[in-house]
Image (tube, rainbow, N blue to C red):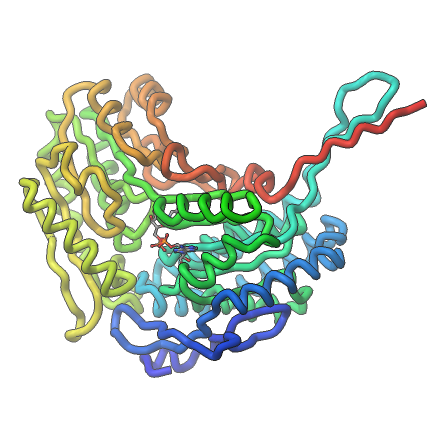
Length: 491
Ligand code: NAD
């Protein structure tokens, strides 16, 4: 490890976790994990491929068939997962620091949100699992008809880099709670916290083979999992392009269930009668939190024309607090972009906004701290029109596009004119406007007079090309179970 003193104090695994053991990739390859804030090497991580997938799938399958986990009473799985949640909670500081070093997010956010939310998700699913009942169907005296849910078997969870441990927890907690074996494939851009979770699993002495972690690349380990005939379910968070590819792989192999949480281009609609101070502060956080690398980023701002300049002025007044800074400083609200490729991709979008005639109101430039790192200024384009690339496509960076509207119908039509349908926001002090609008928005989540409200009790997922699954809440448990009908004839 060659990064700063902080990471030198941290001990973390870099090998794959298969069948309860940390092991090198079979062919011994490793890939570099780089701190995007300093460009320093953090670790060399095992680079798994199809051969390692074979081992992990057979371990996961064996654990499932032997019922070492699936055969436990729900209350026993609950107790085991609560132990795991406690361990995650106790290691909050280490997990948060690893997340910050690995993908550039502010340490304050990793401490305040990512690490505790990971523990909370495991705890919530653990607590839920011995409180869900199966059904007895309403049939006549001649039969007893049972509608029961059973674990699927082997679940492969393929997750992205923007909230590495939280996205992993949203998959593995309900999949494990319902009795499945899980193989987690973290993004190659942020593998370290997934491996740290494996270390905690091992320290809690939870059963081997039930939870496995395979670091590596999408086209190698991800593809091999997706094509594997003995994987029963792919649960995925990532880009829409990869989500589509996974459905092809499922069709080419064993028709495994594919649940996807994909991209977004979420509209945030501000009516003239909204609390503009609150709306402005929230709109800024909606796009600049986590460097804009958020699937639900409020990246399209629709403002009623009469308050357009007033809202923009209030937003610009906030930006001093959102300039990129050292992610390890607790005062920093915007950290580094995940890597050079992502920084360059976002800069290309900024160039296209300029070329297509949008007005750059602020930002637009890459910056460095101590001559290092992949940082980007918070960027706002005004005067955007709907055919522009910056309005249509997911940028996944701190770039906001603003348009004006005159009527609610126009705002709804603009908002819904997207291939995505993940989230949307409405700001109005008129309850009728807010409710009528939220009913017409084609999005999996609508925020009224807030952005990003919600907790573990609410399902999360998208309409349209934002995906077909739902994470969180009791609804997430359904994805990881088969529904079985048993008709028992009585004499
Ligand atoms: P990505 O699709 O490039 O990668 C996601 C995961 O898929 C990674 O682990 C990657 O290695 C793997 N992968 C890539 N190609 C693969 C292939 N051919 N076969 C199997 N696996 C493959 O996405 P990303 O850049 O890591 O993440 C950003 C995207 O994630 C954005 O589009 C964002 O909106 C989306 N996202 C969605 C949600 C949600 O809940 N809807 C949450 C967070 C992020």
